[in-house]
Amino acid sequence: MSFTYVIFDCDKCDFQGNSTITWGDFKYVNEGKETNVNRDLGWCFECNKLVPIEDFSDSDRVIDLIELTTKELEAKANNKFSISFSKRDDKVYLIKEILEYSQRLKFIRERIGSEKCLMCGSMEIKPFDGDYSFEPKEYMERPFNSTKNTGFIHPGCGGGIIAKYNPVRINLESLSRYYSIDGKPLNSEAD
Picture 1: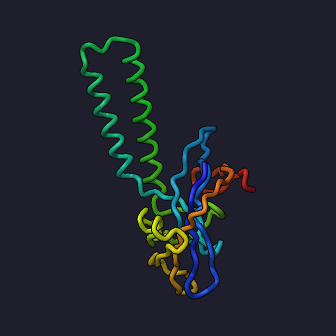
Picture 2: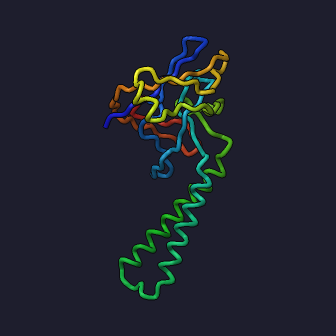
């Protein structure tokens, strides 16, 4: 599958980056189990560039998932006509889902505030708080000239980061990256 991406330039220096750095398969490994790493774009002061960083902002979504799954489980438990094995299997599945969501929520609460760069493991990071999204109308009318000021200030330089929509579709081989549960990079296909 191919995707378009965004190119980042600084309006004050020769810095360049792009949004493809967050692409790929990022996994935590703990006791032989793999879990997806939620990530976002950020600046690493150690790497001195835009990088993927851990993102723990999904706690509200996880709480909502726990509540919805619990309600679904309660509805199945209160159904007096729910005797079949498939209904029992559904309940077991829902219980496992609730446990997984609860573990994710516990993990987020333990780690929030200690997010790391997913390239080097440094905590010296700044989330990318600019806007680099493009409305379809913007890039359909002018696909090769769609640029916008993201509002993100280039650390160390003070220039503004400009986003440029790249209409060229690329297909990158998906690399797997592995991390300990404390966010430290382990060996990966990208090494």
